[in-house]
Image (cartoon, rainbow, N blue to C red; front, side):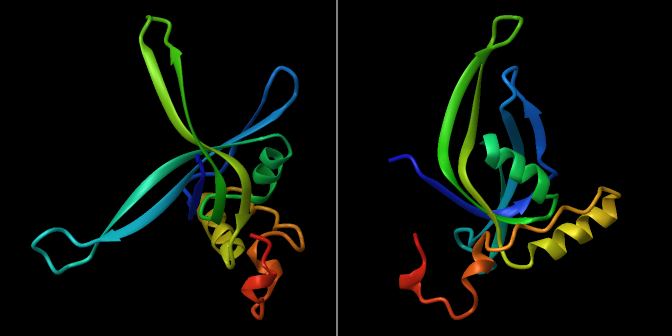
Length: 147
């Protein structure tokens, strides 16, 4: 089973490209922080992993229009490892998450707007009504959530 779920913040704005046939591709990096306690130490430390994510088609366009650096997101997808050969004949490998689902989590619009104002990047459009985790409300019952 190849399934990945991430919750983290966008390290940079999504980069949108199009294939020769016109299909959209969004590439972005999700910063995921985890805590750990080193052996023989009582102090908790944090380590941040930067996970490359790729979205295709309509999902890519939605990510490009609604996400910005600093957005807190939930990403569901699969791990992909691909290889290519450079011009000088060296084989390179790329490991990334291919997203099936991306949603902004609560409060990410404010963080994205603050990050955008600090870097002079246009503010991201708010997520569409009824999308993401916010649509379930505070009183959602676990049995009503469709996953």
